[in-house]
Image: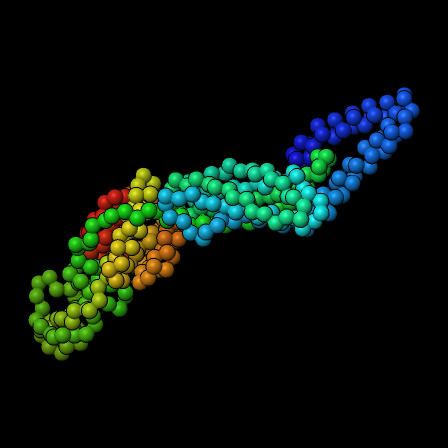
Length: 336
């Protein structure tokens, strides 16, 4: 309806021109004026019919030229205009929105372009990007007007593309803290690392020993409390916790990814604790490849920010007696 209203001034001007020519034809009675009058009468329906016919075969699409970007960068959108018909459409307008999911922006953008006859061309649309995150491209609708602006065809598109923009890589120090213990339910915990379920020996109970390490089956047969000692595990993991607070979000993403890439470069397998603030749960992901890290980054890009320390508090609530966690808080990397 709004676009139809925009056509009213063109229609009014055309009608006035038609009436003036009609008045001149009646007054002067010239054959040429009569021919022009007939042409003005038939041109609007022909213009609209030609536009509708050509628009049915028109192919318009817009998409990023790459599946992933890394700062500093400029996202380049490719607008493809394919008009196989013989009639040009000179008044095409595409409406789309583009926003970082961390920083919502509901402003619609508009690009005006021609769809020339018998052509298949591509138009570059550069979009400046300041922050990392998931950039969402929402292609809303396409408006096509006939040459006389008598009628505008409104085509709803509704396509959505997610474009990940990775933070730039910065130099970070190597981790000096101890690796964390595994957090699998069937693994025994210790403050200085992971222990396997293989029993090394039995010994007498000492103050400070955990009750779950007591061999209760043997204790029930005697007066002593034998305690199980376990073999040291061969594989320990770093556990990275990116704390996504609003005031340090971009720095956290930058330093987390830089540290994660450094560990992969050194052949380390590590784990990442992702805090889902909306559900208030922690999800643990194992990263053993660049593809796994990419998956973790995509998941972080779709998470909302949370108050300071809330991710670490929730991690401790879900996994008691946890130690050796690598907390990434903005530019600070803290081992606790």
